[in-house]
Amino acid sequence: MTRDYLKKATMTPGSDAADVRETVQAILDEIEAGGDAAALAYAAKFDRYDGNVIVTPEEIGMAEARVPQKLRDDIRFAHDNVRRFAEAQRATLRDMEYEIAPGLVAGQKAIPVAAAGCYAPAGRYSHVASAIMTVTTAKVAGCSHVTLASPPRPGAGVHPAIVYAAQVCGADTILAMGGVQAVAAMTFGLFGLAPASILVGPGNQFVAEAKRILFGRVGIDMVAGPTDSLILADGSADPHVVATDLVSQAEHGYNSPVWLVTDTRALAEDVMARVPKLIEDLPETNRDNAAAAWRDYAEVIVCADREAMAACADEYAPEHLTVQAGDLDWWLGRLTCYGSLFLGEETTVSYGDKAAGPNHVLPTSRAAGYTGGLSVHKFLKIVTWQRATRDGARRVAKATARISRLEGMEGHARAADVRLAKYFPGENFDLSAHD
Image 1: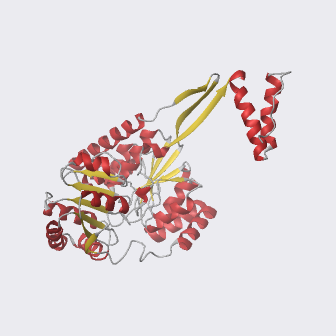
Image 2: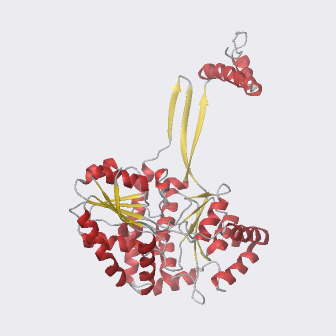
Image 3: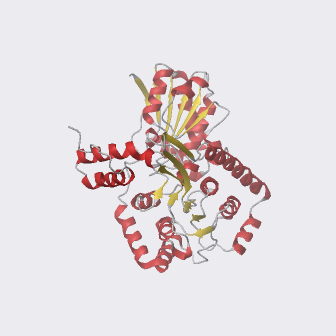
């Protein structure tokens, strides 16, 4: 398939990845052994904060008073959208039972995990939206205890808007702690917390590595890398809007890839000419991130037609996929690999990141090829059950005995034999393995 790269990435998100596993493993081991004291020691070292580790009701009230009313209204608006979307998702999954054969009934139940540990970053940016996305979804799922952890600022504590969002969304506990120490505290049940059954939410490479190491012991939403975004645009797209959307996502971090895929060279060249000017107009920190991401990780690709564009998008499997092209229904039906899809100029990844409703915790680094993002379903265990009458189990027992013997699992076979002998005395069953 011919693709013309007008701009090719010189680096990938893993190009400069530090080997943090050993460091993170050592911290986790020390905190598990040392408990609260060890976690507090790391908090003093990395968070440089010596206030209350569990945010008190009084501190929550003080935080609310510091959040402007318009921002409080916006947080409540975003929470309501996320809550209603999560409730609609929850309604798609129902407990059920099905009679497989006369007298043999099986079913499924969706049971919420007991406790969720949610993480809202607050380093480069204060991720109020992450608190909304994670806590709201866990509460809709029915988790009995939800902890929201966020890095405190020295001498100030957790950002007031994050505290307010966590409170509005129903967090049972707010943990003023960041990094690996926060992940460990939620996992190990320190400071009186309910030990987390699942860990969710974005974070830096140390938080991501801690979640990866702990996966299996607890559930996680996904192993996350730097955020990435791809825009599919045809000749009808507005180059200024396309360029603005690319820059808006590049500001996430110096290693956040953004990609433009189009079938129109003139559009691609116009967008490429606009991006540097838009980056230069950003505030300094945002500008530095976006400039590095555009320079080292961005790509601009010209394809022959829309089918080739769609194939390219499926191959890249982006976290965020935007379509600014005609015939949106065709794209919706054709595209298969993305974390979240934004159809048309009238929506944008920024809406999804902050307030639209669908969750913004999404698969990165091409993981959208095999998984979706955070949803109410991540907090639910889909378990099965079965019951049978004696007659209903008769055929199952005979098949189980013969299959088990064929496999060499005599103990399994005898668990079926004993029931057949008890329920149907005097009957002669051929329970030898198949030839």
